[in-house]
Image 1 (cartoon, rainbow, N blue to C red):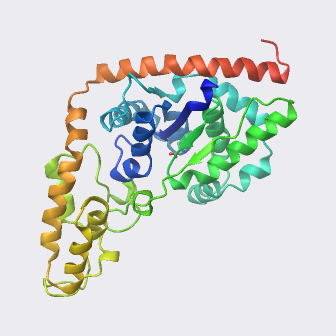
Image 2 (cartoon, rainbow, N blue to C red):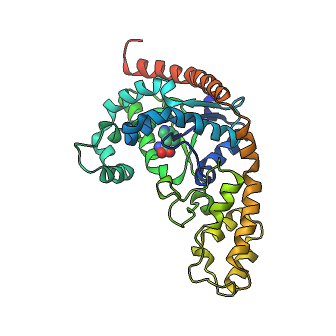
Image 3 (spheres, helix red, strand yellow):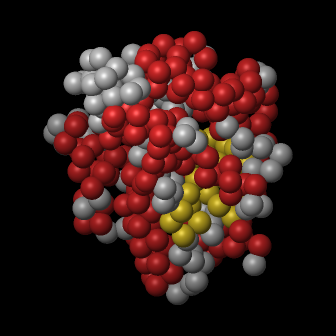
Length: 332
Ligand code: TRP
């Protein structure tokens, strides 16, 4: 049962750069799974990016190259794992279309992420048809590879559930066992699952509060210096509240001594400046190998990696599509 060891995951190419929240919440898991010997399919979802960015479609291709560089810099080894762009493997579109015929509309209207995005857009005259189908496309992405598991950030849980429901329904409708339920691989470590932004809000490009994997050491230092700390801690001796301080949150994630650092911060025997200085040092050391790797990858290298990744993905995807067409009774 070699297909039991396959893993599929992906991120949208809405932004050119991944941040440390993307890394801790998802990408780092992919690297671990790769090292454990799983056969990894690491996708960049450019069609999904279009559901919200159809007016800026011209940047999406460039974003794909940059995101792929982040994947590889973070440790995805193109010799072991397939790194590819969704739109380069047309089978994703075909399976999406077929699932769009079998998926009840009510299931899609109930997805919480859909309701949120729909509210942002304001009015069905502006809302693209593709937004409702977002989880259907994501299900096609996943089930094409009939994976053992799907490692994603916590926000993706509703999409994973509907995916297994769509697969089960397909099996029932067409009397097949083609799609076995896959596992939801969501990080359990609370700190890694939820990395706050520099201002303690959710880390997001739109809030301009991210530390990116591709930031230089100086950029990272400047960002940490301006990060949100305990607002009532003016002097070193004022008591800090580490739970609400972005710098302390990052120390908890990255510093082996975070417990004593937190205690001293609380007790007023340590200042925010010292916390920041120590964090800058630790964080830059942590990100150094990723930055060095990134600097060594050219555009041509990454295009090559994506080309080969798509070829490998297509082998699995086209085999699944043959089985799908046959189960449904479509002509081969
Ligand atoms: N929806 C995911 C996100 O926003 C991206 C994605 C698309 C995905 N297709 C996928 C994730 C398949 C896992 C599996 O990040």
